[in-house]
Length: 312
Ligand SMILES: [Zn+2]
Image 1: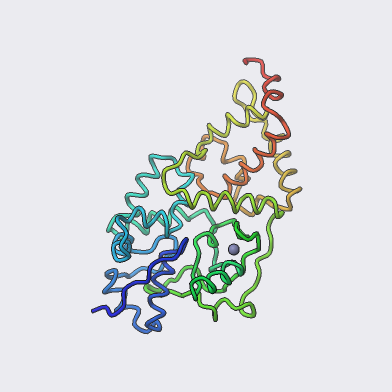
Image 2: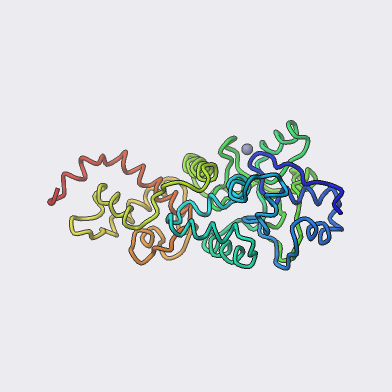
């Protein structure tokens, strides 16, 4: 029999964090029994991207459906943002199903290339605000996105909590307590790009997270080819001038103190525009490439680049 009910989730709180706060009331010692009663048996480690038994958790928290819970309290809207619509629907069905083995397999596939954080991150300004408004703090979704290092709301660099993001052990959850997050125990992250670019990536990532699962992002190599053609990097026969594209792209990132190779393998900026790479779905790569494109669209207006084409 449960004595406590789950606490109501805070805005942008990870589902993981709701469970962690619930367990903190029981001082962790009873994790296995409490979670078995609440969510059912769990043998796998804990993945904060997608809490296990999503539909049972959503129901326990009074949500009408697992989909609306997942849209507000998991990282799935971000990870699924650049997955083509049909694959996204299929993945979402699997993730929200009661088959936890299938759901965790799909979740692993989604984060596979994304270099998720090793430890939970937090914004010191958001934490102070949480303490004033709610009397406690919690793990925010927007602070755990790969490639996002500063708060889109406060513009401050995140701090590393040193609390492991994933646990190999089932039912092991860590709450974002003040003791865990105090400045003497945590470290500010090193910036990996200029403030302006970091802010752009953070703002766009937050927008991906906030708009749920129905969206129309640029997801295919063909769409990128069309845009690059407007910018003069692709000729009338469809051939990409890879060396000029790469030179301009690397110049742009160097000017922004950013090493794009940190965000993927094998010159990903070329792979993402090639037919063979339909499975490339890493959000931060799309966001960086789109930042470069937006910058070129200002520098090279469409009219000018189209004037060089012969087939109109
Ligand atoms: Zn903040």
